[in-house]
Image 1 (spheres, protein in one colour):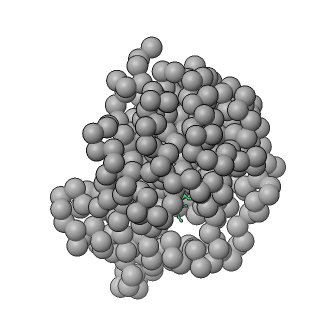
Image 2 (image 1 turned 180 degrees about the vertical axis):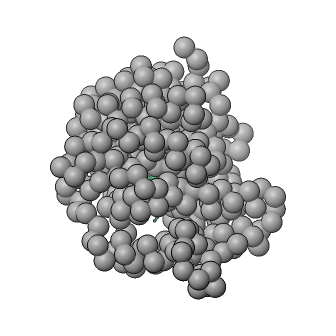
Length: 322
Ligand SMILES: CC(=O)N[C@@H]([C@@H](O)[C@H](O)[C@H](O)CO)[C@@H](O)CC(=O)C(=O)O
């Protein structure tokens, strides 16, 4: 077994994977192999975050979560850089079971959200919960998944990170799905001596987070806009900030458009089906399938931005970015 600290750092784009489902609501394991190839070959995305928000992780049974994790690890072997499994759950026992399982199947890391029904009301209690989960997989890098808008747990990440390695020796980074760049910036600033991964989770604002020191990004749109986002990362790396901004604006035009129509996991499933050609199927209740109208509008927008092959006259792609 390797020590958590000897693991290579999680960086670059990380796709928050969708859990493909059949029309009757079962998990469609049969397309996961294709999905891995699509991410690597078509989007240049080599790391994944499984069973998170986009993967409807909290809507799956524990047995389904284990099977999904296993399938991604198996199909990703020798193709993906890292497979991180989200193992957060309301029950500490379930979370520990999933953490242990992630270690057994050879995942590269685990992530945990704050339990959000009976809530930890302060930092110390939250740390205690996370610590117990992390201890179930003592050889795996541990990431805290901060997503206050969905969990309702508003404990600032900067506060949580203060001294966290003393409590959780496997702590390796933060997945920050919030727009508070003061909090995010301070996480980076106060931990400059540590080799943490700072993964930003608001795709439409990634460029601002890169300026603040993000070392990577986890998000839903990297499933189908990974190539564009990679071009933005590349431009940023080259210090070509005007090109980087151009790419970010281009991505924003799409996200802004779908947000106005109503955007969430169901819509991500529909868009990914459209762009990749791999059937993602409907979401599971309480989510509802994206409407036909949404999908048609999203398709037209993707074409006008040149994110999808466009068969009409080229000069109609007025919004396309280079
Ligand atoms: C609330 C939400 O779903 N946020 C997404 C973003 O990628 C989001 O879809 C994107 O920024 C567009 O708003 C990710 O942070 C979620 C995520 O990484 C996950 O699926 O675990």
